[in-house]
Image (cartoon, rainbow, N blue to C red; front, side, top):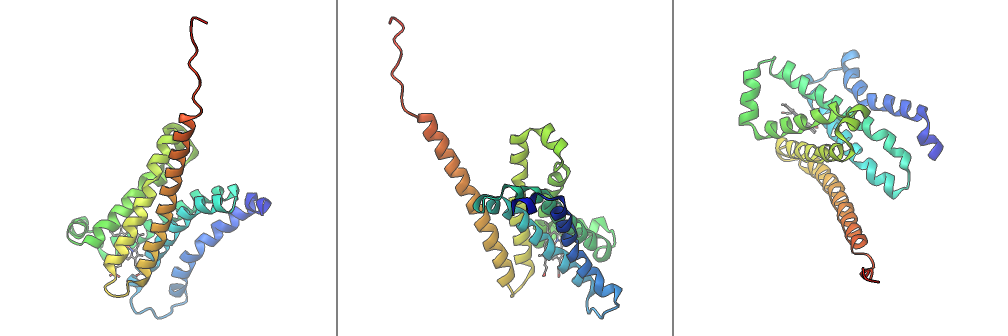
Length: 216
Ligand code: HEM
């Protein structure tokens, strides 16, 4: 398993797999299938996959630790960048086909429709994360600051779930399912943080040494 996960072929295969959803969105148009509402079809497809990739990216660290497979970390950046890629397609669909590049209309929407406001926030939060995802940026920011910045992915996922929940009027099962997943991942992360803090505090307290008497 370790060898398979460490192979460059596995990374290449995952890259191709991540392009699958894009192919599944384009394919019906190539084949001239009848799509009742093409705009909605693309918007829903790209929105769904943005959320799925966000959840997948967030699942890497818990899986890596629970299954003791450190090699899984190699795929986290790719999954996060694919979330951003599908978010860009999702936003571009809205910008080009829904709003016809009318920036004034978009701002009005962001201001007046809460589900667009949180969607916009979720997307905006991903931009600095995508920009700073390179090794050069990790070095420039320093590991600690980089990690703090990249915690914003949780906030983006939460906003994505709220965006989805507010959009659907009655069929709330799917957004609630994503909400449960994100809540579980967040709880796990907070649990880890709490355990680490406790361990550090215990190590700091350590066995007390007898004070050394300078006169001895
Ligand atoms: C990380 C960012 C985002 C995520 C995770 C996300 C996710 C989603 C999801 C899951 C859906 C519903 C798909 C379905 O019903 O199957 C959706 C629909 C939609 N999203 Fe987003 N979205 C994001 C950002 C945005 C942004 C920035 C905009 C526009 C400013 C936007 C506009 C829309 C619209 C217009 C719809 C379809 C609404 C309708 O069917 O009437 N989303 N999004």
